[in-house]
Length: 409
Picture 1: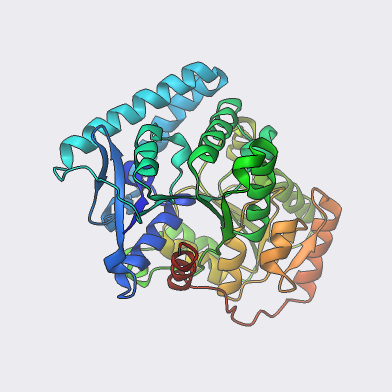
Picture 2: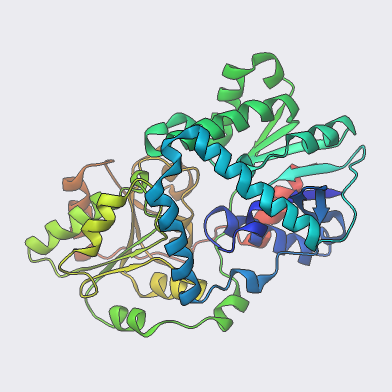
């Protein structure tokens, strides 16, 4: 049996980033005849790992009012900023997950999982937050295969883009995982190479015993979600124009380089280039001053739109109505919006970094990282000579799930 940890996604009522991956992969594996009988989603509780039937779709369909309430809650804790005090942050995390584990143990009546020889325990979720090591060691002792999916090593390789407490927590997670891991699977070749390199540096003897592999993420949207969710009028109104729209899709955080994109947009406006800009993504960390800049921007809700809570239908609508995707990250584990955009025939301008070259290849336009002159030049060029994109043959989530499943054997 393949047991897939979904604890963080189960506990967090959102569908972004890693939660999107967990939901899509699990959903596909549970639907396909070839895999559904071999897969069991699990969540961590105070009674150990417990089985769940699936991740219920309605949990991730937040109303915009609920989203705003959740954002107020998150903003409160960000203002206090526990992360500036690592020990206090770790204590808050421990209390949060202890409460969640107790609640899960109460809600789910099924007995805890007893792993046996030949089982595979796949940590697909953001498991670095979990106090799970006692249970993982039990599974290891029972001769189950322990597999970790790694999305990126940004907290360790680029700590300047993360809160200090998060970087320390992630490094501690990776060091502990090295003791029990039988296999690591990255979400790209680039991440896989980072895993094997760091493992060899931190635990050279143990690293030799571990398998290393990778799989790619899917790019299609759920048709069911598209049918259920509606597009807000303000979004329809913004995109109802003949003016070319630059689209950026990602969490607003320093490494995503939204500031550079906004600088380029302002430069184009000053040069009388007719263009609009749309940011889609939730608010991340270390962006307090940048968010004030956005909130006070003179073109906000005119030629500049920011959406923090877009659903799949709205995101797909934006991909279909925009002129080009601008993706300026200084570092990534994958860069899913690039593939999503290509999948819907939207041209892409991306920073010239290794992972973008891996997944974008010769299908997208690159600009020199952090070079505003090069970025504006590339935008002007694509405005004058629109790049035609034929429908991308990138993996669907079904194919992505099968690829991951096959790597577990």
